[in-house]
Length: 139
Image (tube, rainbow, N blue to C red; front, side, top):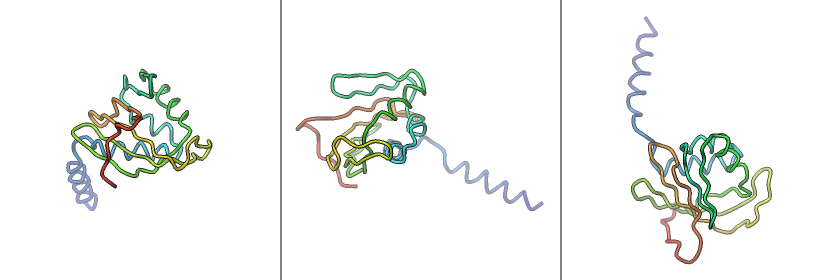
């Protein structure tokens, strides 16, 4: 009999958490995963078929293994310094630093990325470069 109230509480709490995570929370979760060297966790945030754009290079992730390999190849971790969300898109500014296993090639520099998130998964991760990068709101 004691389990009945507990089971009801679990059902009520589960019902309150419906819906997909916000694009901001997905971007933050990706950053936390990369910063803690959890490449598998970062890879799970990408949708199958997601695209990654870095300069002239465009990659498409057709598998979890491809997403994990790309995340593990990133030389830098990054503290989120600012973000701006609009619809399913989030622009994030990171301050770069060394990862646990790799030395960052630009420690202390700022890097900018655009995340497009649908159904709680990253469908586009685009590294933004140049003077056109918009100013985000401080976190």
